[in-house]
Length: 178
Image (cartoon, rainbow, N blue to C red; front, side):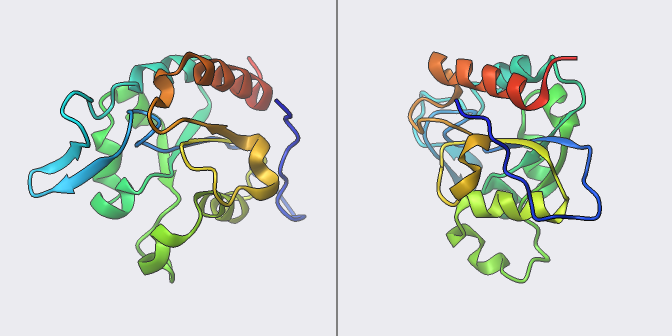
């Protein structure tokens, strides 16, 4: 995998933060989920909402400084706190430090139509990030930042062994081992 870094335009400073942008549907679970009167439900009764959360937790364990930023539509649907608190593992919830969506954004009503990669790249630029990676089943809008994306098959998510290997290699390439 080519690991050339997407660098935001020249800034007077850069952030030392290390960030993994994390989607939920198609990543931490297979398929999609839907909001109902009874809360968020899986698109199929046999699929647990966060069936692969433990895989993500294991993959990021060697990187204690790594922060998670939610890049999921759950934030817009539920709000940041409820989306974060939906994660089943305290280890993951504790690492969540933000989200790409915020209700104060001028374009919040059109947010779901903005390509996912553009949503993430806006956060990267706004926070002057240099070290970052995204894991998502969407690859739209990443453009020259494709090397920062671990792309999941929506129907397999992190349950796919090849995707798990790519994630492990990408984490090591972007964040190194301590």
